[in-house]
Length: 127
Image (tube, rainbow, N blue to C red):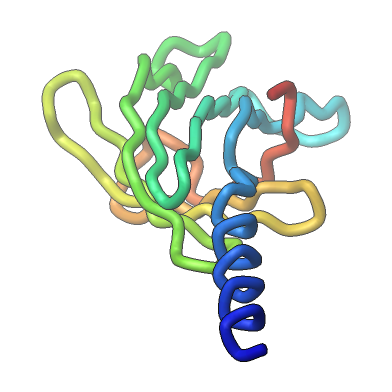
């Protein structure tokens, strides 16, 4: 009986780790009433606990455009939280945190200057 319980526990952990909650293209909404002058989009793929992808800030104002940033990172085990690193073309990088809650992704940047928004809520655009 103990062996069966152990096998069921291992299967439940394995099936939980296969849920790739962060995979997809996420973007900030262009709202009509607020003063957002940018659109932040991040496309990431999650494989178990690793994350990779790209991010970009686009705007009508050229000084707000970031260009394409490479994204690498990891998901905390059994968590709704991920730590990512965004890397610019010149090799400089900065960190960020992703937290998924209620089908929304909260992005918080650390040390990015004005390249990307410090804090933004993203909705899934497509898988």
